[in-house]
Image (tube, rainbow, N blue to C red; front, side, top):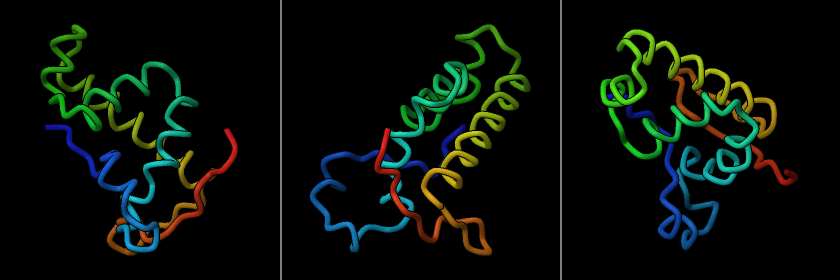
Length: 108
């Protein structure tokens, strides 16, 4: 599949104090603010595969892409989103590549 550790669980996280959230879950606001800044193609594949749970294979078939092309598109889109999160939210990753901390982007 094309599941990626991006979490937008809304209500559950909204009710949790920020300091009690895992750092990756606290990224919800930052992701929501940065996703619209991506190109439409990047936004669409990240939304479909990472946020809605569609498989890369299903995405490829629905958009008349080869599986390899869809995988490449998703990897490039994730990299561009990651770069934006690093730039706009000062996201930092630990040695395992997991989100360890960030500063939420407050302006749109």
